[in-house]
Picture 1 (cartoon, rainbow, N blue to C red):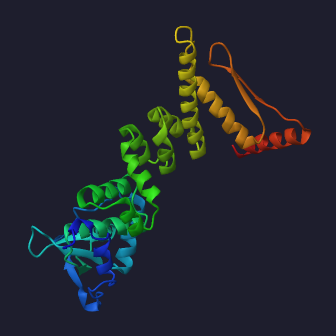
Picture 2: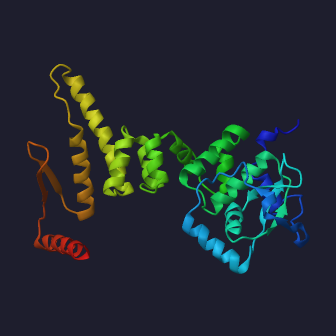
Picture 3: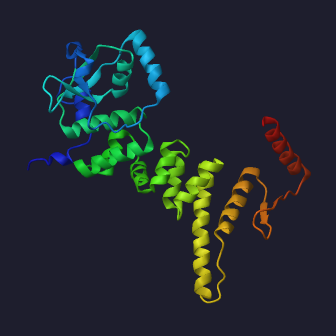
Length: 303
């Protein structure tokens, strides 16, 4: 029975490139100098954003020392005598800034699937992709090339749960994606928001108040506890149940977070107007009071 080309093991192109299969490892003669204008960005490059500061630093280094590691290219499918980038787009872009006329390349005639595999695996292993770029790359390999999450996990050295949770980031609302891409929340925050009932609000709060990932996890849990309590109250007395305020769940979550940080029970009470209130920190020994006082004073001095 012939093997389904979509079901071959992931990374065959990368293995061939590294000389781990029957394809011989490239020798010095396989590196050639190519005019930089004959090289074009890869269609399968998962990376979309390049940090300006690091790009300029790389350009300065290339201007002084040249490109130390050749770019990986293949013959362009639509332009004879020209090439398509498979790996090394940062070096190619930086070389343009450094005004290089030629760059060293290794040519490998890989199929589309192998080209995507090499581009994704190289970027993931170098940790060059944002969380959303990584997720989009995984999704393309699954949808377009029929790979499983287990395939991907083995190829990039990640757990299957990491692959699954990373792909799930694509299901978050666009506004959460924007906060993530802007660096206002981290990938850990975004993963915690996957189970949120209102991920947009929590993402905004996390960005505004600089919540930790653990705090976001607690707030997500508080949302579910609030929803469960509301459902229970309605079930007990559908006609007389008083509406629950979502703020109550957020207050409870903040009490829990402060208690974890301080190691002491914390109570937050709001006045009737909901705009003012008090925070009570309970201690049972003077040593605990002294410790809290020192922490607060250190915070004031740092500011």
